[in-house]
Image 1: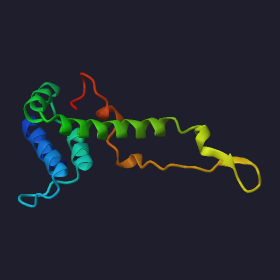
Image 2 (image 1 turned 60 degrees about the horizontal axis):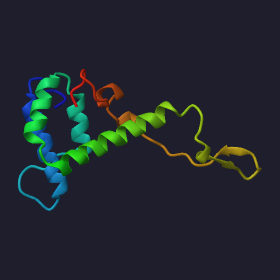
Image 3 (image 1 turned 90 degrees about the horizontal axis):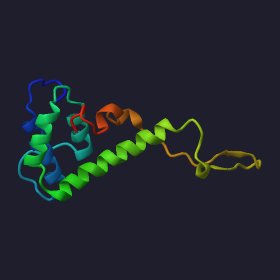
Image 4 (image 1 turned 120 degrees about the horizontal axis):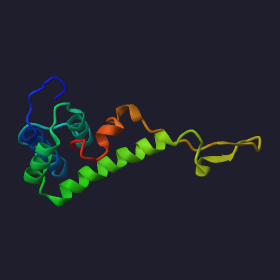
Length: 132
């Protein structure tokens, strides 16, 4: 998907549906195995030539399963949370602070979020200018 530039929105969303279904029924061994859902969703979001109106039509047509839509929304929510943590990391959260062995307040609980693997924030956010 990163090198092909002429995929239609319906094809991409149909493949996303297949990825969601395959993730939910991991016992299915027939047919090609799609990449993990977060990775495929990231590829869908990063795809450069998506028309928002066509994506909305394809989502309505192919993503009718509420559980599948919820799985996609959970992934998007986790990405937004990771970006929020990244953006607000100038000062540590009070829950991350504690005293070290010398009694000095220090950061003792660091949760590393690999934001390099996340799609760009402007592609994750939902608006009229973005596709998913």
